[in-house]
Length: 276
Image (cartoon, one colour):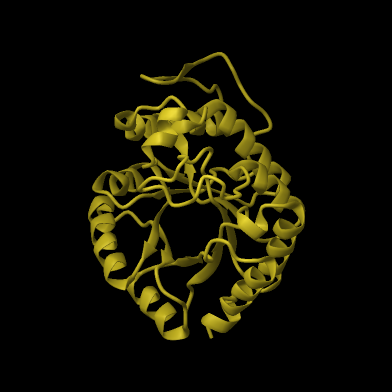
């Protein structure tokens, strides 16, 4: 079975300080996880309102700063944004930051992208909810121009630049991009603009339904499939996801675990235990 196991939210709760983040990253790498995926919320509604996933005082380190720290405490494991809410970031600044992570990590970046869904957060950062999809597509194209084009330039509705450049470029050519989201529009963006698709908190039936839509959008183009499962892993469950065509399962711990509890979670879901 070629499926791999990743770990989500090493930048939150017990991982939201230098000791916890370094400890969990090192443990995950030692146990054979293939990737670390940092969660992204710049701000959270206060008081919490649906569909916000976290209390406003939930500790969550910045998605990109965390990757730089994790890069310094690991050697091999992939480092992923999981997923960055792209329309609420300046694409040129983010391109510079992520290129720096890829360089400093020796080419281990995976760029996970979502359009976002949390209206109070998007509004606070100056992004109308109705524009989030269009901005995501434009920002991603603009970032790729900075990373890949000999003479970067972009002319769009939200981004426009020419006669500028940014070095060093990423080590990877190209940086792998994973598009998250459960809507037909997200599936289309994955098929047209990304190398993979990421489904969040999906059971087996939901995964099968999502993958039917993703594959229809991809029209035969191969995409790397990552899913955070909505159930506890065992070998039979892992095999069932693999049989659906999932390439990577990204486990996420419950919120609010202590460092010791988080370590036990990482050990319990270690690839050698759940893959057999």
